[in-house]
Amino acid sequence: MRNMNVKEVETAISKLCIQSCCHLPEEVVATLKKTTGTEESPLGKEILEIIIKNAQLAQDTDCPICQDTGLTVVYAEIGQEVHFEGGDIEAAIHAGVADGYTKGYLRKSSVDDPLFVRKNTGDNTPAIIHTTIVPGDKVKLTVLPKGCGSENMGALKMLKPADGVEGLVNFVLETVRIAGPNPCPPITVGVGVGGNMERVAELAKHSLTRHMGEHNPNPKYAELEAEILRRVNLTGIGPSGLGGTNTALAVNIEYAPTHIGGLPVAVNLNCHAARRAVVSL
Ligand code: SF4
Picture (spheres, rainbow, N blue to C red):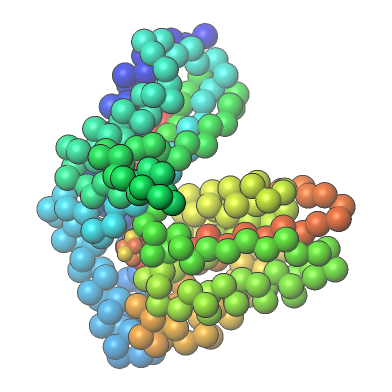
């Protein structure tokens, strides 16, 4: 059994909030650069160059990549040999988010009573926390700030098993077309398949934690990712939605067992600011 004070988690989360909002992962920048080389539209190429320059400026000055620093999604993979002491682990994660968003001068975007009052909570809490218990004595924390331009364009459909691969592909392409410029392309298309209504939404979001260039280990799904990416890039939406051959950087599919009577599919789009920061404690 390993003892860990929750303060360690709070401090780590605070740092990850600032890191993720200001420093785009290297492999995302590398993918954007590669994309610039293949973009056929001169305007699209120019926009990609501006996006890369913006990411570089944010990196150099510790400023947010985008004004929308999102709701804070936190993945906590907790080793079953870890014993937390010094307080409540969930409260520590929320406190870390509040600290990071305050110290990093990150925009606080969370509003409570979303229907009638919409009052800003003042510190970007509550975080949206996904906890999994895993073997071992480590704690892996992933922070994924998610802006609403892209989050608003997600969709979920309870397909029938007979809809099959074609039904899934059509739904994903329809979602991307409806989204158009709103999710700030070039996008990452996160796709969840299976589970039930809430599980499929989690799968789609979790697929956005994947590294650029990483594919589903199941070759059939990896092939489908490549095929959907090809077709998304044929839509012509392009960088910032102003036309071009690069609408998406990646398509990531995650799947889980489902009911014999269903084929749930969820699509969660991420913008060019594909922010993510990870630490293992
Ligand atoms: S979708 Fe992304 S890049 Fe666009 S405004 Fe929102 S956070 Fe910023």
